[in-house]
Length: 461
Image (tube, rainbow, N blue to C red; front, top):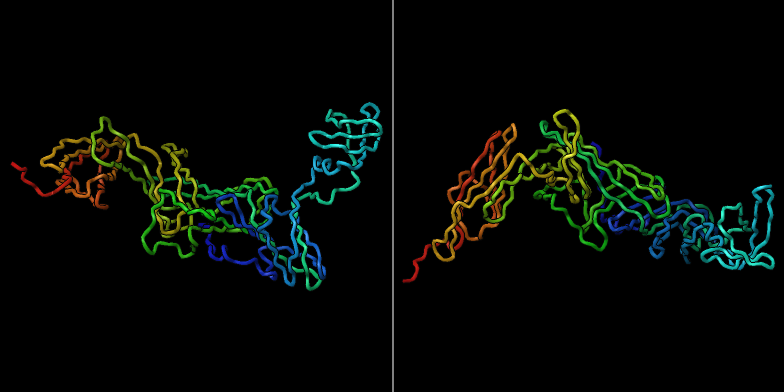
């Protein structure tokens, strides 16, 4: 089983830039949940003695320049600039306003080229030229026309570039670590699970989807994913039940409401790319299908309703899983009687540490049902209610099943009497029953609940 591993979250949040002597990683990126990422880019730069200018092309086009910091041995920063005007035909014309360019026109019939010198008067919603004594609008009418420039304007860049003026103690090449925050890159996790009911296993694959809209490529980058957004409180989906004390993974560390996941190997996230990276392959995780019925309070149902179908599994190594699972969507499949794989449902999980119990909601059963009936309700004295309940559980399947009834909504001052099947008390107002139902049969559960003041009182005469 191949699993993503945790790195120290505290070190991520408070660490300084990597040492200038560090050769690897050359590029590292940590991606958060709220459209922000931390980039650390280690490059070898040639630095002159004294005050000199360093350029870092291919930084993110959505960099937050005020967050940029540079570390290099014997170098101090004087000022830094972010040049985000990218080299495009439109930008070239805009920068040429007030200057002269050459216009080359080609005669479609003869192929002869005519070159004229023109002054660019305007490049606002079209290009206006002055050629000799005439004013002309450069139209996009399909005729072969091109514009020749003598040079590229100094502040136009082929790629977003961060330029830094530094003061260096000595000349020479050395590693420099550039670190900054950027928006435009995000991640999400998705899972595919194939459930084998007969074997009681779930083949689980996990994929991280990375989306890059920063205008830059991150090549061979060591990638970490942070669960939780800086400045926001982490939340956990209801599908995860936390294990008891001692259940946390030994390779997991957390800081405040954050968890961090490291992809198992460096990856390239190209510009304007969405890519998926496999981070989990658990072919034989133990899982069981359960039928749940949940009721809050007591009432009569005119019609029977299907039980909720759920898969229970434990995120532990001894049962074939055991990993730090990022929040995401789990899509579930199973094989039908012909062996074909069929989609059966999907559910979301929260950020799930090792040692947690995971409950996946699959759907509603049509052949395993329940129906409740209030057989009798009376008030023998003021403030006391006695309710006689009956539940009928039906199973149209060819094999026996067990239905779990979760009965909540009882008064804090109550007495459960004469249950036909012994329950387990979960808390002051909730009980649960495990009800066996035979194949193509039914089981009836009855009990009486006395709620309110338990002491009998004599009404005043």
